Amino acid sequence: ATTPAATAVSVLPPSVPDRIEIPDIKVDAPLDTVGLDAQGVMREPDFAEPDDAAWYEQGPTPGERGASAIVGHMDTPRAPKAVFFNLKELKKDQRIEVHRTDGTTAVFAVDEVDTFKKDAFPTDRVYGDTRGRAELRLITCGGDLTADRHWDANVVVFAHLTGKA
Image (tube, rainbow, N blue to C red; front, side, top):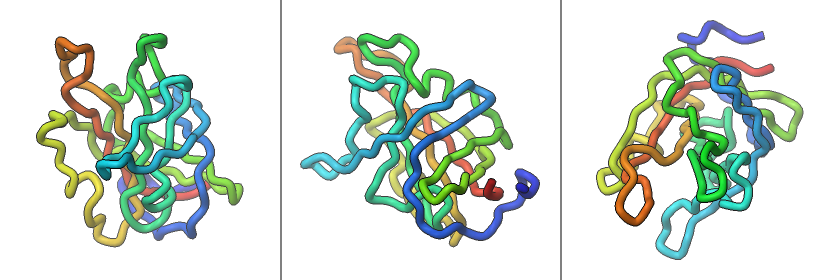
């Protein structure tokens, strides 16, 4: 059972996530993991798996206190519509489910969706203090395509834990 989308619930114990479902944009994808590169920046998900998303393994697990991050491609050179292609279409209170290896599913509700230029990415807002709540950030590319075929912005979904299934 879940609580209404507007109400946050207590946090869940740590458990590695292995799948994400977002029914409203038809996402049902396995989760890989990503860490940091040599410059201390979160790595991109594997281009060879455009239909997979990836959890940032050096942060909290989804449902734990803090901001858990899951990243996925919007597109790749070989996949014009990758796993998070429609991420920017999410609306307030829509449901996100993150399946965990302990058999539970952390259920989140979307708070907002925003786009930030990569050179002005609000790191503290995205990954900072969540006032003790369990929150989720979904991140993909967005904005405009540059001359060298890279996106100049990131789409970020902010969501909070509403329950478990």
